[in-house]
Image: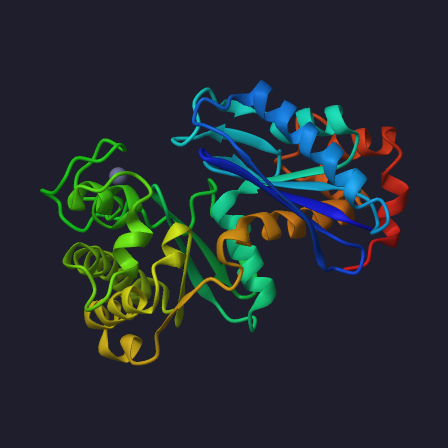
Length: 330
Ligand SMILES: [Zn+2]
């Protein structure tokens, strides 16, 4: 069957369909804004699902949808808990709202988790720390072949790791978070650039611009500590920074190796995400396919301590999609 993955962000909604043969198909990009609230988001998502169903009618249709959300997510319950990127989100049962609206199973996860899942599927199966650098900095952790969400869904979030206790004030209420030195926003502020001008700066001739070198070094301080703590050997960089090119990547790798134990640094690799800017949407499509499988096994989900307040599985059954789950190919 075909599935649809959505990357919902503060500047755009990116959709990628994946056909019944597992190939990327339908693609759509719609502008959004940070004022995109829950009701408007469900409207946009329903519109995209309808367009994808038409476009993929001969490729397995759209039997499930996955959403990468820019904020804190309760993946098990399908609830968007909060967002610093989008206004008006507080404990919104987004997956259930989308399922009610479009009549197919919906999976919800953090957008960086979705991008990390895409990297995991395209990669060699090893452990890695995924770091998404755009407006802010997000992170995700894959250990032992699984995405680790942690007790509260925060595992891997490296953006608010402190690199200077007396440093710049951060939106989280503390000081000196790496986010304030190495995010796209921080680099643009430091360089006096208009938002979105970063790729032009990175593309210039000659050595790496000093402001980008400073950002790479700041990121390396946080990554070095993270590698010492986690003892993983691969760091994957995604987000808009994935367009900044090899000189930036080399600077991040050099700073990271310098900032961790020599034996950790000697083995560490820093690479750009294989899924590029589409990673979160493609990973969300993988989440949608996983969701189809769990929709066919409601007992396990319903009996867990964090059983959903609403029954997504029974909604799916009511919509007539659960019987198909047994036939899902992976
Ligand atoms: Zn912070």
